[in-house]
Image (cartoon, rainbow, N blue to C red; front, top):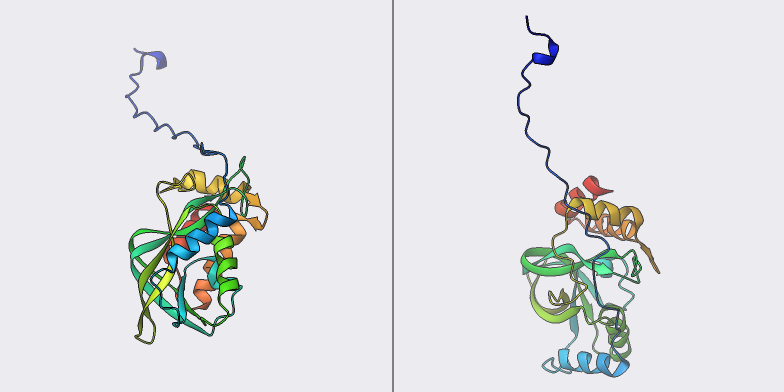
Amino acid sequence: MSGPSDAVVPDLPSLPTLAPLLYPPVADPVAYLSEAELAASLQSAFQHHAPDEDIWLFAYGSLIWNPALPFAESVPARVNGYHRGLCMWSRHNRGTPERPGLVLALDHGGCCPGVGYRLPILDSAAHLAALWQREMSLGAYRPLWLRCTLADGRRVSALSFVIRRDSSAYAGQLDDQVVKHVLANARGHFGTTLEYVEKTVAALRAAGMPDRTLEALLLRCA
């Protein structure tokens, strides 16, 4: 009679090996644009904008809950051809170079609900300069005029900020393992990545345009 040691043990499938945690990402040292470079970028973005027309901005992230600009009008809006994604590394505002955080950006593909803000052209120069300092200091965004449909049916050309995929700030599509690590650890000058995502989720839901994808990511990874 065969004993326990003679029992045949079936081959079991090997467990998948988890991919290494690619964090922090390798990146060039942070290089901020100079005042002259910011001014040139701003001038270039507005070279074809009529000087007597108000300015529409399309907000999809922190500009929804912290616009910090004197808008004359705020309207739910949508753009096609771009989607909101947690795909931009933040090495100052929501993280550090050693523990970078993540922030939202517009990336190619899909569509994105957000908020359209109308900024009066009168006395707008100082406010636009402040906006450029806030959004364009790293040169990681490409300022683009997007076709934007407002909730009341109007169609406007709205300025927004689209991630440059050739920038070292571009994170692309991240594994949940990395996102979990970032949400648990990244903190920068303005707070944590987790707080940033939670505020954006709450603001979108309060505006009647919940982002189910972002909410699901927060539920899985927070």
